[in-house]
Length: 229
Image 1: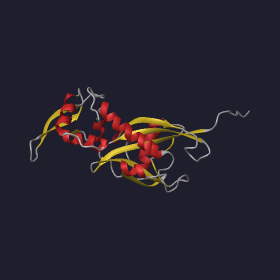
Image 2: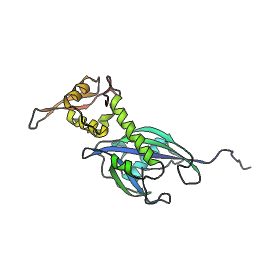
Image 3: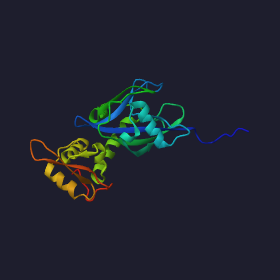
Image 4: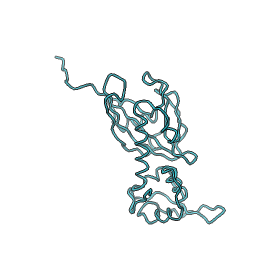
């Protein structure tokens, strides 16, 4: 007996908005597609979820296969699910679970499988590109999520090395928000936010006063918040 469902055929993909800082700029990872759909067009890394893997595992696998980025190099969280009809030209309805991946000093990407090229692209340039699928919208959503989360969470430390100075942390905010920040005011806000950073006891000596070295604290949310405006 053949069971015929009255529901349409769906496929699920895991796509990733991967962000890092390069030369003081917020950059997003883009790949040039070499598969049959949108061949030669730039897009976010991602692909179909295998029947025997979780959504998160699929995201990590796609990052590894399409850019050579290891799971422990990024902080991963779900962004949104995208499933409007017609967003994918393939015959089945394709729903994408999109992930935001943040990392410090992520390496030059090494494409494989469905990509013949991968690049870190400044987000302003990515906004101007005609990306495949609905990925232009997704990039904008991912960047805005990262910008807003800097206000009320400690996610900024994901863009830093294991230890950092307050000027290092300020440069993260400046790059992600694309704005200059007053150093003294920023330092005051960071040091009064409970559990945001912890002193390591080390100092970095330069031409001016020695700079204290910090690590990420135990807090995940900021009290008080650090607002863009």
